[in-house]
Image (cartoon, rainbow, N blue to C red):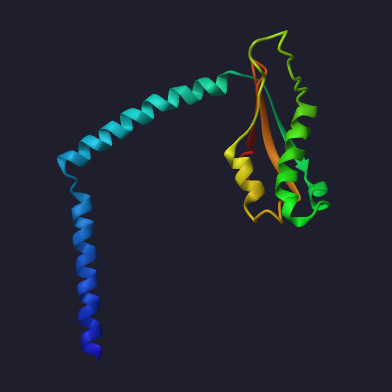
Length: 150
């Protein structure tokens, strides 16, 4: 019994070692794929930096979501998202533009990180408060991100 178990363990370790050796020596195709991925990431980084520079105003808020707990449990997370949207509109002075003044509409965008943080524990148990970073760009669009460190 013990010998059979030991042999199985040796075989497993040998296969793991072989796989590790194969991964250490990449083929030419893998090298080309890695180089292409690096080139793509280099192209993406400057775009993100430009987005960061376009923000005119940026603030960090702690938004209380306690009023979301007043509604029935199956409506709490959507209510929390609405509370976040209303809070940011009020505090960042978001003004809805009528069609006569400008052709482009201003947008309030809530990032996926914030949405996932609210929905993390399900529809019935959103957090009691959340820290967000609201950034307004030069066009008047507001984007809400999760504050760093949260």
